Length: 463
Image (cartoon, rainbow, N blue to C red; front, side):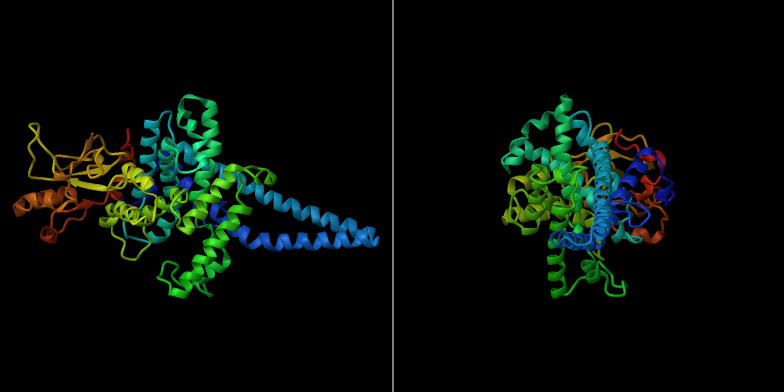
């Protein structure tokens, strides 16, 4: 199979890649949430200081009655600098609006059910654009996390709206659950839910792009590994910097409107601040709307050096344990686990198929998790992608029960009795670059769908 995911150029994959670029593009020539944050942290403080200095000079001239000519020059410079600041705000707003519109386009549908399918689709696509621990996966995962979190927060907020006991902001907007039948409610949902919720997800750690934080992460000469384990002093300093810089950015640079003045006293803006601040402080409540997806994304799209796909289904366990310890809101945690189940979207499932009479075969096939909200979190709803040991782009959806899912040891043991010749036959057809030494390995607990998804004809898993 081809390994170049760049060859996978369906319209959908191009849209997802565009969204990734809009959020996490790192070149100065490509406007993105990341590049605008860096511009804000480096350019805005000196510009604001310059405005303050000019204002003081103008006030001094006015009170002293001296230098009318100088005053006109200073006022012109003041206006020019203020215009630049306003243009920066306008640019950030237009970009953020584009990010949110595209995120909504890719994740929402014309009904609640369609929104679940579309959200599963983008989550699965994001995971299958990665290739496990190969290549520079840590940087790529870091780029994907804000979008991944944003989709999960949107779906979690829908659950919170359904019982609306988390905070007054959501209680007052419970009617927005019915947005699919009313254009006015849909617009309100976009302005009052999607805009602040997606903003909170993508700006949650924006303070890490502050120059001081980057200095801690990359060192003075920029050669340090930003994903290394920091010593205790540096870790605490980074946490403090991230918290202070993120909150400052959200309070002063978050653009919910094209006009800066309309941000003040905006309930949606206050909602973003409450979510991000709550996620940092660790108090169980509204902050858990972004904190829970953040914890989950840190497992699914980990930047740790020992990243292994086999650990991905353990993401829910961390959420479960933290909820039992009272570290996160129990009700939200339960909602979240119901949404994602035990297996992330895009995860490769190896399973034992059954024949027409329902008897298990002495072989395994491949499937990919493609649906949210499984009835049983341990039984993912998947698209089967192989039939009789041949890959197919026309498989059906199937719920893979625990007893046939090779991720679980009891199911794997059923196939341990396969003779060596039969096992070799399976591996030759289902494994790229098969080697005889692979026969000595255990029956696989999962598989890597990157190669499969890299082929354009295999990218319609959700139809």
